Structures are given as C-alpha cells and as structure tokens.
Length: 183
Image (cartoon, rainbow, N blue to C red; front, side, top):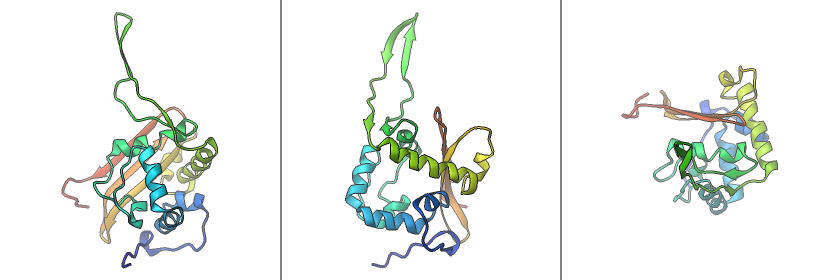
C-alpha cells in the first residue's frame, strides 16, 4: 500500500543478520521479518507475552498498533529471555508474611513461550546492543547485560524513548517522554 517505513536517518545497510538488525534497532528488517512470519503468528506470540495487537498492519513490527502497550507490559514481555523461555507477568507483591506466617502468596503462573535456544540467540543480540548498538552506554559495566532501546519522533527529534535492560537476575525499564508529545 502506501506504507513507506525507513530506518533512522534514512540509512540502509543492505543484507544484515537478525542479530545486527536487533542491535542496530533497524526498522526495515523488523518489518520484513513480520511480513515473512505473518501478522497472525506474530499476534499469537505477542498475546502469549501479554501484549494485545489488534491491527493487521506491518507497522505493528515497530510498536505502532491500536492502544499500544504500557511500559509494564513491554517489560514483562522480556521475562522469557531471563528464564529459559518462560513468560511470567510482572506483579508488585509476591508474598506477604505476618509474624513469620504467609498470609498472601502470588499465584501468577508462568507460560513457556520460547525455547531456551531462541532465548540464547536473542540474549546474544541484546548483549551486542550494549557493546556496539543503540545501548552502548549500558554495556560499560563489569557484568553481562542485555538491552533494547526504542524511539518515536519526527525529523526534529525524538518524542518518546525507552530502554529495557536486564541481567539474569533483574529487569529495569525506563521511558522518556512528555505528556504533550513534545521533543
């Protein structure tokens, strides 16, 4: 149709591996992968990760879909990569004890979404993102960390930016934006 996506700064890199596409945060390969896999199959995986995509458009590959996702939902969608492919929705309270007795225990169940091998590939790509990609500042640590960044904006600059970073133990996410959608 009339959908004409581009990479940041209109830069194109020719044929790239999925790993390079992820660590460079390239839009065109993301769209081509979605087109190849099919929107229905991608929607099923997104649903397993707690993300509802109602749009049948390739722009969904870039996070452009009806109602979008909350930062909490996006953060939770990264939990399989820290846990051998098991998705676990995020909860604020796991357990409450009173006088040493458990009075509340979270009953959230995990669901197998990806294989351990798939997670290993994604983790390698997101580690590369912290070494040579869009999250280089995060990679300057003495421990292994994976990260993914995302931005939205116009030719004048970004109106929205986020980063999700994780180790084998913790996930942290940050979003930078203004309520009025200004730069």
